[in-house]
Length: 439
Ligand SMILES: Cc1ncc(COP(=O)(O)O)c(C=O)c1O
Image (cartoon, rainbow, N blue to C red; front, top):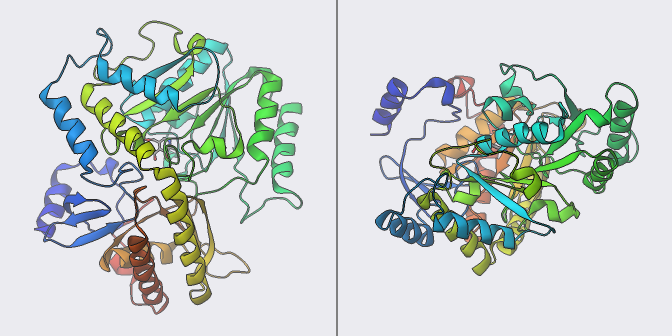
């Protein structure tokens, strides 16, 4: 049946949508496990790229979505005041610091949300420029791609006026000295020479750069960036799509560094697996113009009900705290594994947003890209799902459900230990992974 699904998938699903690491065919799931065709259970440390924030088939989502479908009000927020979306907007705003009137825009994905923000900040400020980061992934639509800097999107047309800065990487510092200060000096130099800061509408930043390699910025960097933005009237757009809503160990990842963003973008985990994104910002920006960015079914009652169930569960079960605790357990275990497995060059992250960078040599830090593909493939064979990211495709990304248990952490560490040993012993061949290019 698994082989059958692989063949049917190849026959009908567009290749441009695929990012495959192993031949998994899944037919169901519960909690932190995906069920493979044929009945095998796979512990899923990806949670579908972080979207399944409460795991699969969580009772709160099942109940809320079932009720929403049964009692469906009109679905388009564009032309009706619809209760579930309004309630979700109120509840989301209640979680956010900040003053003044704010508004919430709903969409279906992180991509459409960032896309909307790109157009909005340009239109509102009248400034054409944007600052973003090399390695950033803000989405797969034209606007959100134009402020991304990810290696997978070199096909995307360039947008004039976008300055891409290196995201400071504590494991691979580009300069001597204090890393945050050096990165900020680079920005100051750019402002003093090649780019007038008064032409920049906004900076787009991930509080932890995820697809670029799970990079945790050095302390002081985000605050320093904020200071410069304030000085020049540049809006700060924080992309919380992957690491927001509890994953970092705090409800909002930007709060860990005391950042005060102008605009916040949510996606993935907000819908708990259903299509839902949100942009929150000041009314004077968000109310810019009628029909500025309209999607017929955005904020629909089913997705909104899922979002409300996610927010309620996060708060009632204190899942940010669980992410902090389980993240610490997982990172401690991974660091212990690094004593046995020379491939592990660095373990980093916050809460349950964790990266493990694989290198061939800890001195030279040569990226172990093919070994990373093999590790992910072998882990799948042994019953564990995780993917890899990074500009050199050599960083394991762990974004499990936020209600992960201690037993599941230990199970994952046990499988990873065996997978590393097998890859180091040469048990996975180049041929086995050749068909799974990843990204
Ligand atoms: C930080 C970040 N922003 C935006 C997106 C785009 O979200 P989506 O793929 O759900 O449209 C992603 C997806 O990986 C992401 O990681």
